[in-house]
Image (cartoon, rainbow, N blue to C red; front, side):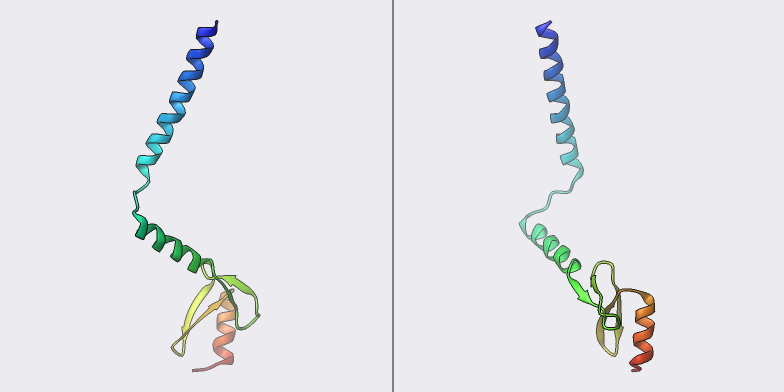
Length: 90
């Protein structure tokens, strides 16, 4: 009986180790510079930017980014972008 429990326990541990090992092969290997660049890019995309029309803070990742008059603006919605263009003609 003890042998059966020990075998099941060892097979379970072996299963999880093999599963983790094969998951590791699927993800690309990055060196330190690539990891740092990816982290900086993620932080930049998560930066909160204020909408100039309704003054709501929006993450840059989901904001609507428009270049108007050579300057980049981030809006919470397309309606705010249109309203800004109407109020500030170039």
